[in-house]
Structure formats: structure tokens, C-alpha cells
Amino acid sequence: MAALTDNWIKPPSTNSLNAIGEGVIVDIGTGDGRFVYQSARQNPNKLYIGIDPNARPLEKISEKIHRKPAKGGAPNILFIQAAVEDLPSELNGVADEVHVHFPWGSLLRAVATGEITVLANLRRICAPGALLEIVIGLDPARDQTEIERLGLTPLSIEFIDNQLAPNYQAAGFETIERGILAASEWPEFNTSWAKRLQGNEGRAITYLIVRAV
Image (cartoon, rainbow, N blue to C red; front, side, top):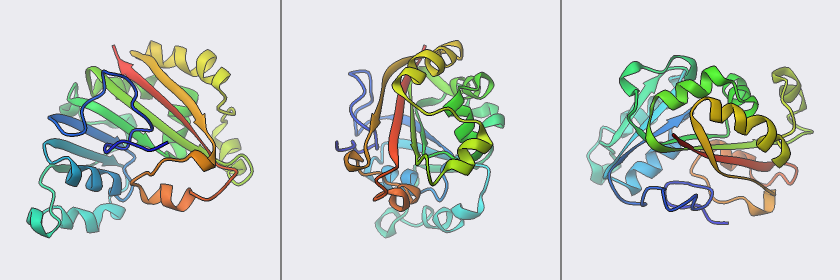
């Protein structure tokens, strides 16, 4: 299943943004910023905002984006150091898309258990009708220690429908799509972490696409 230019798992609905067009895309837990950088270069008419509490992995790419576009620069990128629990108020209502790709730690726990306070923060930065895409890649064996530490429940379709969806709804989101992809069905992701994870047959992708209402 091939991802779109903006890295969607699949076309979520007719409400999704076109690959080229105006819009503000926010990447939560952006890591080294690769997804934001590659997407911004492909879609120069959109503004991409990468957010992460750890600024160190972003140092190199932060320097790169200020070059001339012909030399790899991307003036349509903004990086912000912040945790999802404390997103700047200046972002309120600005996002047309929000992506959370392969989260870890507290961010993973929040989106995989449906912590309403964190989900409400994500809803706060969304414009009406904005799409939020959650992509989680866990291996029950290799990630067992982290799964137990975070108190995660296996991400089955039943769990998503019966446990996660109501929490997302309480935070102001309606479910558009959800699914689980085997390792052999992984689409191409423009993230360094996804590159490291691919090839592990035990690591499936669970994805959830919701819309701000």
C-alpha cells in the first residue's frame, strides 16, 4: 500500500488535503525532522511545523533549511521545541493536518491509550475538519519492556473501536479510518525511525485517522 506525498497511510477520505496546495501540517514528535523536511521540499506551498521536546536531533536539519532552496533549503519549515503536553498557544487552531508517526515514551502512551488531556491538546491546535494521523509500529516481543512500562494494551481493531475511539471522540475527534498492516504491507515513510524498524516481520503498523469536529 503506497503512501501519498504527504505520507498518509492511504487516502483517508475526500476531505483530505491535496498533495499540493495551501495548508499547515504539524508533525508531533518529529525526531530528526526528516518527514517534515522531505514533505516540505515536495510541497512548497504548505507550511510544515515539526515539534519535539528534544532539539538536539534537529540541529543539522535546522541549519540546512535556511539555505537557498536550490541548495536544499526549505523556507516553509518551522521547528519548535515543546512537549505535546505543553504546546504553544500560538498554534491554537492552525493545523490542517497533524501527524504522529512511530511515537515512543509518553507520547506513545498518550495516543495508544487515549489520554484525553493530551488528545485535547492535539485538538486545540487543529482547525475545524483537520485530520490527525496516528501511526504506531510495535513488536510485542522486542518492545515488551516498553509496552509493560507504559501499560499498553494490544492494539487490536476491537480495542480501537471500543476503547480508543470513545476517548478520541471525547477530545473532539471522529474516527475516519483505522487499520493494522503487516510488515510486508508497510508503505514508504519519510522518517529515519521507520527506516530502522522496517524489515522486522513481527512489527505491524497500527494506524488511526480521525477528524477534528
